[in-house]
Length: 336
Ligand code: CUA
Image 1 (spheres, rainbow, N blue to C red):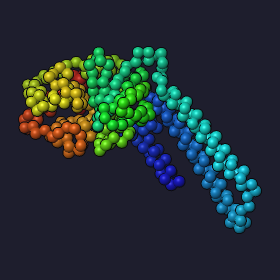
Image 2: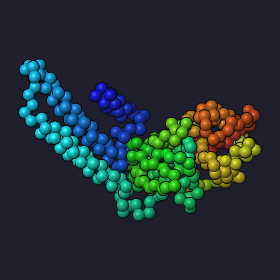
Image 3: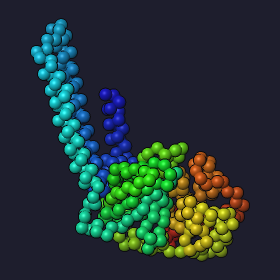
Image 4: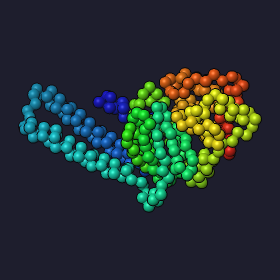
């Protein structure tokens, strides 16, 4: 009982915080459904607790008064309270679950979703790869851009072990299972940032397998998609030197930067790295200091990840940071 109350209080407190990606602060139709179901279950639990505790209190009070409790027909009571009522409650909840599962498996607006934006989501230990339709040429990591107010179709698969794709404010979890392709629909009503997290234990850095869903107005999203699919260009001399450092250090063997010789596919695509919300899938803030720290020794902040430490000379590191920081949408340059 105390554990249940504590959990409920913690959940409600978490839901009140502006920062928490709580299912109780839904940002789309999928999460709204889950929120409704959550409240139904919550109030059912409250009603059951109240009835049981009042019943126990009455029995104790009667026993104290009379010294014993005479049951008129204990079997009838056990059958009704222990079997019939739980069966009715659980069957009703199961029915609601089936209704919501069916609704969640389809887009919110079937007509509008005839030719939906489809994004392939690939889970890796421990980062997310988002592949946009082949014609766009866009591949990102740990940050999924979508147009707000539109159903987006996600095709989910894993490159290694089990992962689970979860954006609490938008949709319930969907697992990424080896040898299987799963599908889900995602929709955010409003523009905004919605934090997501791997929700299936997948190894040492499971906790550092976060991502961000960035929902934008359609025009802004289209502009982002066009930019993210274009070749990256090093503009200043420092950025050009940084690009050379990137090539000389062997980074290109694992990472891709569109428009350059870097076309490795085993690590996150870095074409949009200057714009991303974090480094290492939610491990570090994406700023010059943390980028320096990450490149010098990624094992320090995210032990076990696939990237080895890099010994880059100080001036080379400055140029490399200048280059990677420049890989952002032009209108965003100079911001943050
Ligand atoms: Cu991927 Cu946990």
